[in-house]
Image 1 (cartoon, rainbow, N blue to C red):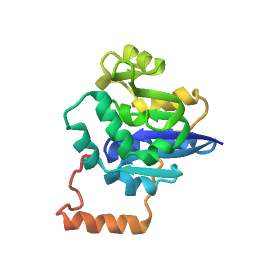
Image 2: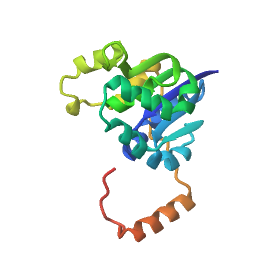
Image 3: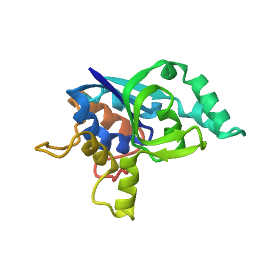
Image 4: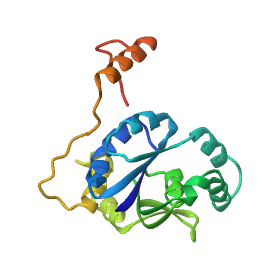
Amino acid sequence: MDSVLVVQMARMGDFMQTTPLLRGFQKERRVSVLVDERVSEIARKCSCADDVIGVDMETVFSIMNTSGTAEQQFGALKRVFDNLNRMSFDTVFNVNYSFLSAVLSTIPKSSHIRGYRFDHKTADMDADAWFVFLQKMVKYRPLAPFNLADSFFYAAHPPASHSFCLTYQFSSSDRENTDLLYAEHGIHAGDSLVA
């Protein structure tokens, strides 16, 4: 069975928007997801991910904020992520436009990296041809009628009779725990939250 790593280092809402991509791979590939440790508990409850790799972003940002070249920072990250460095995937999908995610997407061994990646020759971000096409097609990305994660899904699976929806299911105990957590932080029913 093929394996895929989806790099989703953004916030909880971005992870939720990635679930159609995860679900699309679920039946035919082993799906791992690399997330910010603060999102890992939610990601572990997602039925679409076989493995969740949480990253302590404080450590990563400490490395990224040190002086040095991009190559030196890349080397420090590889040492910190020795376990990730030993992993191997058929394909890595990086769904975030960030230098950090681009670097992280190149750490595990992989035959293909889709999306943004770190180019060792130029010490800068690079994108695969599909992503370059999307960027040129949608000149003003904030006005695009689709999410970039959907674009990756379509790149891997041409449109057919798929039904798409966010696939994170909450159990009743999860809802009760959420209500308690909200109450602890002064959030009440009817309050607006932005993820």
